[in-house]
Image (cartoon, rainbow, N blue to C red; front, side, top):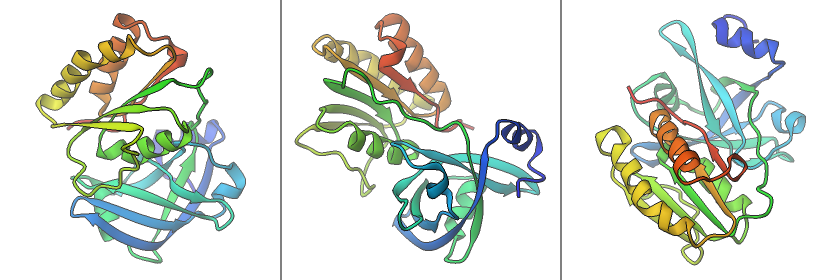
Amino acid sequence: MGQGRGWEGAVLRLLRAKDFVFTVTDAEDVTPHYRRLRLDDGGMLAATGVHPTMWVRLWFDNAGRPHQRAYTLVDPDPAAGTLGLEFALHQGCASDWARTARPGDTIEATVQGTGFEHPDPAPSHVFAVGDPASLPAVNSLLGALGSAPATVWFEGALDGLPCHADPARHEVREVPRRDAGAHLAERVRAELPGLLGNTPDPYVWIACDAATTRTLSAYVRRELGVPRHRMHALGYWRAA
């Protein structure tokens, strides 16, 4: 396994990435544009363990060429050897595969680069920025950080999506996607500074499209002065 993946596959092999084959066991359309799959993990969780916001690289065929995309594990169960994956559907080979995936279908997966460090000291407040593509990771993050209150800027409308925010502790601020993410950046710039001023031990987590993530990460570090160890930023997709 892992042959014919081009330079990306070669680099991952050099980094001693671990390869597995997942098998679809169930498929569910959560909304017309959001699909959940349940899969057998091919022995992955027993070999790697599991941590919050853990993700894997899936390999898709893109007109005869290999294409990899990263997806966060949903409800991984090491004892049963099963996991879930959720897909925000749009144009592209990954979404095309997810739309038609049925029990018995298989997909190759690579584990390399994923990790999670619990903030120390524990956050007194979590500030997260996400969208449908990173919603599984947002859910995992909120679950991992226990009783800490959170403010989440969510680009798009939840509208039936599986958000695990607890209204007693978590405030979700829905932000329409406009101007290729610029509207989201403006909202965070306008609202985050005042909230940070009242938070002794903040933790900022940013996971939206790559360009907006870079913009907000630089803003939080350079202009708001949040130390690197009190934040995490990772672009989850690239706008066409």
